[in-house]
Image (tube, rainbow, N blue to C red; front, side, top):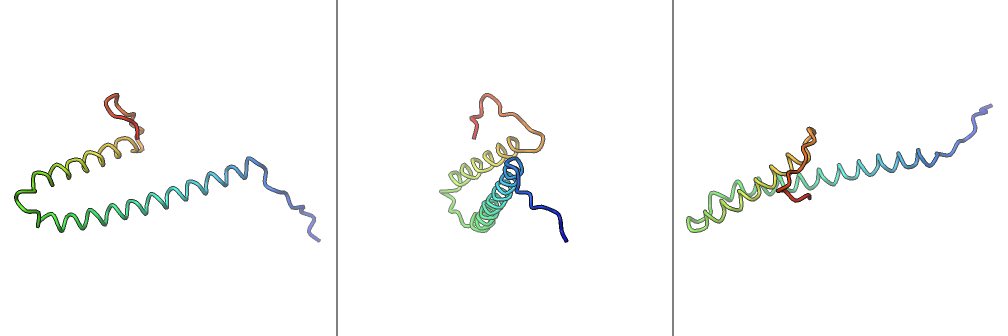
Length: 91
């Protein structure tokens, strides 16, 4: 005969489980967004060769903007814990 009584989860345990689930949801959502961005970058890398000469300066500016944003994200969210500089607005 099993004498182990069912013990409901404490509020702290439930909160910890919710936090783990929220972390997993965020990870899945972020990975989906990164996959989408990766697919866009792949398509751009193929199409960039067809940009007409008159539009190349604008395309280069747009690429520089994307690179700048990616570098800011990398420095802001890297494991080293870089703090935003006063010139950079927080995300």
